Image (tube, rainbow, N blue to C red; front, side):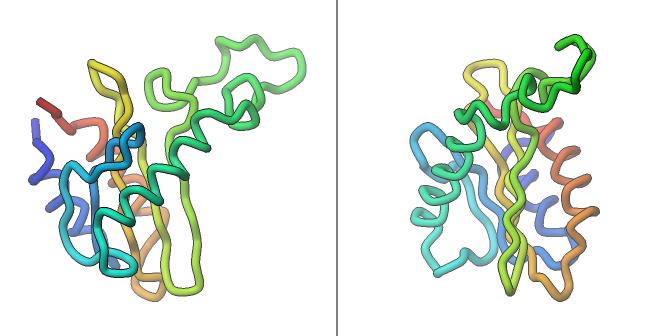
Length: 141
């Protein structure tokens, strides 16, 4: 099972990848980074993306119950990545895509993988699939 460094290397293989970071969204700290960072500051990017991650997981609008269809029992729809309320967050800018994929951990599940893609050469659908695979296999010690 791959650790942080190997997962970051795997993320950079995604077509159009400009940079990847593993972030603890409760503290806003980067646990590892590779490639470029928007604005050139890895720690600032980690803190800003952590704020987005916190909003997505804490707001009731994004909870599994909010996505429930009328007449559907809560157990019929998944709660995201193994119990997390959100699987991923995608932000589109004029020059790129930011994919934040949440990682289920055995301790507190406060980690996500952030991939910054070039808009012209990146493949958002492929990036999302690969990020899900990487996040599922990531081992944090």
